Image (cartoon, rainbow, N blue to C red; front, side, top):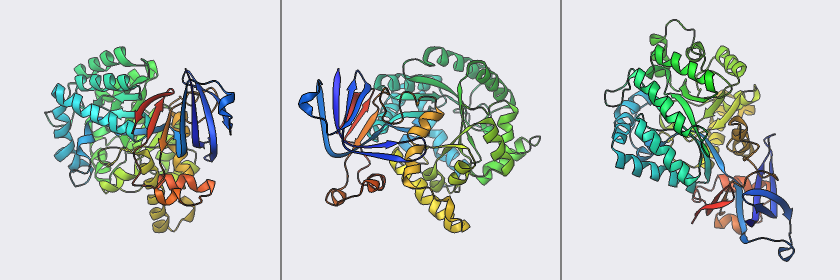
Length: 423
């Protein structure tokens, strides 16, 4: 089926620039972009369906590099810093996912909201139960979301209600991966929750599995000062937090490290040498009073940086909101450190959550921006009335979209050229 889409397209590039395609049309043939042209004569082109989005903004499907499916119900709930918040609010909530109906209902709520915010690809944690992880894959597959999902691994320093048996959870890894890894748009991700929740044996086994079959690995690193203190106590033999993961061969080009606020120069060098991916989660880091990651510094020194909503410490699944927050916290860090060159601009933040994230996940040949031959993953957003009535310059469209906090929900969302959401 051939579909013609008309509107204002914002097209991110790998050099962190954003091309504005105003009054353009994109022709899609069976989900693949066939033509991108301005002022197409409608009667001179063959198509089956025409979507005229007029003055609306159309962007590539957004890519969230770090979030938690079971925590969606806890958005805005709770208080305290990371370790306290996990124990008091999140672990009890995740324990409820052992009940199948609760897991299904909660997971459906999560994915519906995710799609409505224009996100078409996400890297996610399920809750610690095998059944809940399989439910997450089933719903993701049904909704066609490009999904990288992991079972959080937790065999020590974890409440009894969700602690895992080491041997059993290794069996669960193989069972889930055998069914879901690289099936349709799904990939299974090895997910040691963080060093404090994993025994040496579990970390060793996961490192071996990662090396054997090229899985992505996701975990948390250097999120809070208290966490760093605890890691130092539990792993006295290693020189720093990053080295815990490196000891077990868990740092590779397919490793996603969330937060990374408190890294020393040696750790930065190691992450760069191992070509790991960093997921910057500014909203979450504010909510838990964790700190501010030096995103621009990391980018400038050659690290791979993307963005993650990190729900529920992040209080929205909107990657537009996360992009805005990345810009705003970088300004605070700039003032605090008297460093004007560490500010993240809107075009950089937008590229981090689209084409750059697609590169890191190895899917940039398929999605991430609008190019002939790529699949049409896209989200359509409406500008605020105040911006509609203004004569915006082309370079102002992105900021008008990103800072439009009252219009975070998409009007329409496409995956593989198929309309999967419409408001």
